[in-house]
Image 1 (cartoon, rainbow, N blue to C red):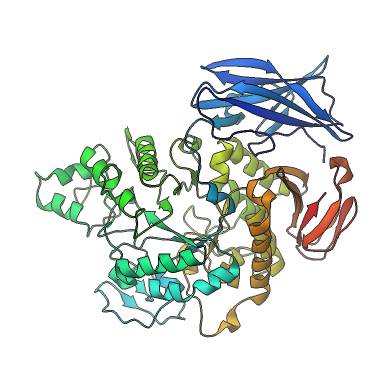
Image 2: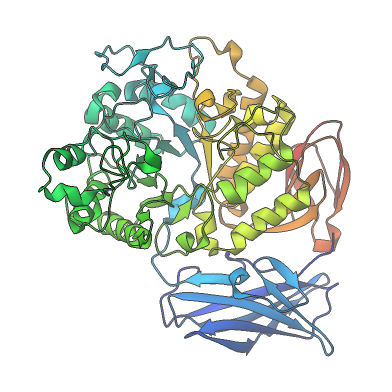
Amino acid sequence: MEIHPHHDGSELYVSNPAPKIGEFVTLKVRVPKSHSVERVFIRIMQDGEPTTYKLKLEKKNRVESWWQVKVEIKNVKTNYRFLLATKNSFQWLNAEGVFNRDLADHGDFKLVATTPTPKWLNSAIFYQIFPDRFAKSNSTRELPDWAIPRKWNEEPALKQNEVSQEFYGGDFLGVQEKLGHLSELGISGIYFTPFFPSKSNHRYDASSFNEVDPLLGGNDALIELRKSGAKLGIRVMGDLTTNHCGLGHPWIQEALANPKSSKRNYFYWSEKSKWGYVGWWDVPSLPKLNYSSKELRNDMWEANNSIVKKWLREPLGMCGWRIDVGNMTGRYYGENHNREVAVGVRKAMEEVDPDTWLVAENADFYADDLDGLGWHGTMNYSGFTRPIWYWINGKNKELVDGFGGSIALPKVSGKKMVETMREFAAGIPWRSLVASMILLGSHDRARFHTVVGKDVPKNLSGVTLLLTYPGVPSIYAGDELGLEGRWGENGRRTIDWESNKNWNHELLKGYKEIIKIRNSSHALQFGGIRWIAIEDDYVAYLRESKRETLLVFVSRKGVSARIDLSKFGFTVKKTLFGSKQSGKSIKIRSKRATCGIWSLK
């Protein structure tokens, strides 16, 4: 693979990722010796006009040269790219790569002059828990009339009219009793899918946003769990449906009962609807919220006692919000309040605690939603989950990819996978990329162990990508144990805590080892990423910070590969995971999928 000039938003290349307007930022480019360059310029947008400045040669060694420039940040959003020139030719370097043609601006590097993202995100590893299915205490509670009780180790029946009513009884005391498992794994954050009262097991149809579902133990159980987690260095994050509430919510009930109520303005109404109000995706149990209503905005985030603010304060103490269907919130036909919601919710959170995380579910990527001014990041399905699934999947033809319907996953090369990941990353500021949740699966997707056909080495290749790629890793509860499932509902299975014979201990051991590396590595927490080998069946990249450089290698099948590190000026310092290597190159020979992480010097 040809070595290209490189720049990204990490600390090696950008002196301040969250500058204030009027401040100067130093930007750097590294150029390999094999790449002929006489002059380097930056093309930067300032007050809407492209402006050009010349970079100075900072240093040079036997393998590369470093160029830098100091520029003033004049606007909230700043786009820039670099021009690499010789006497007779030039090339552009933008966030997608190097091009010997003119470019549109959408692939430019991006800086945003706004409040910084929480620093603790750099070292965070989250664990997603679907409360009904993770762990059950001995507490007994009277079941509501909607619930269909199931035995703990039963596989979900998945009858269409029962999927949201199957009730296993997981609760917060059960989670608290299993915090030791999370601590041993190396987890530093729990993301709970909704815990509000509702009329379903998934709780995305909230009957109230003001209390924890009594079936989970109520507010006191969450507070105790959160405090116990804090002693182990584990934060807790909630899940909020800003797009809709449940039919049992007092807002919609008042609106239906009284046509003159101000709550009518909280919703959309249509003569085409069988119910009068508009349901999200025409589902009657999920009335869609209308942010034309200033009173709704006040209740949701603006007021001092608003929903968004209340749960961040003591004694509840959530570390942030995951926003359900953030891409659809506030959007309905000709109306678009999405940006106002995102910016408003972030501002409200920062008023309570500027160290809280705001991550939105954007099932399909829309770059403007992640410009750095609203959501800190997204659940990175488009730029991480799907490209990895398409590259590494097994032969299971009954998987559902999340588009609806049962489809066979496509099979792509390593090059296509990386192109997709690069394209996603190029569309947003670096800080939005590293504040996004990266995941191999979730409660809405098939289980990753099923995606890879129960192939443990393949699974560990995916886990290596998860824990070494820029972003906030999120592990779906049970993935570390090899739980299976062909689609979202089918994957919402319980964990057998009484007998761990069904656990995949080889997989669990691999998770623990790689998480330990992530938790101790400065490069994985703060470094940039340089792809140095991209083949059909394997890829390799460097994670580099001011303190450390790591090499990551991942294959989807047996391979024979050699990567010459001398071209980059490195030798192997230590093998952290995978086959033992030394010297100026790594050599991989494997009959199955394999992965490795090495510290370089």
